[in-house]
Length: 209
Image 1: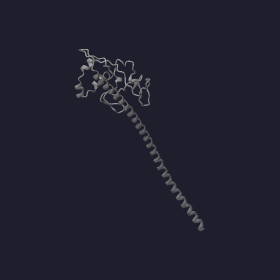
Image 2: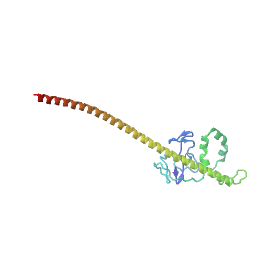
Image 3: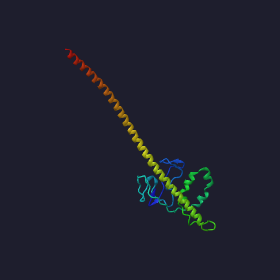
Image 4: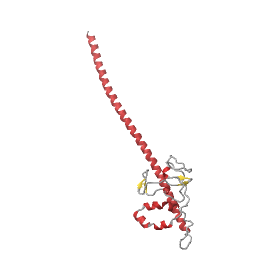
């Protein structure tokens, strides 16, 4: 989930579904969202694994060191004002959250001013908002790490299940071979006993002569 030393979380399944790794996906990655600063970013569908700092996909399943992205997204205040936050919370509208996750998480509000009086935003409020942004981004990163770890665990379990199935097949074959050998041994014991009886009878007859 990194490109040019910048973190881009993995895209997930549609809201409310489960990802391929089995983790419930409420929000998709911001990488799947179109943005003004991400037009040249590689498409998620072309990535076969986590990205290194050089943007090359790897299959190790180990994410590179985390780094916070720069905030360059512009705020569309008309879209923000149109959101009914109370309705989103009451209806668990994850789709609306998904639509705004990139803008909210990676927007730059330090230069924003009040549209009425043109006064700068309270620095304490800016700091609170930036902390919330960093928290969201790190939680997305944590979700990706958990997804990678869970996927690796599932792959190990599948490999062990295949190995167990092979061992069961081998054990069944060995058991059948052992059964066959027991039957063969039983038959040979009968033959040996019969030959011993015949040999003893022949020796007795010769002795009496």
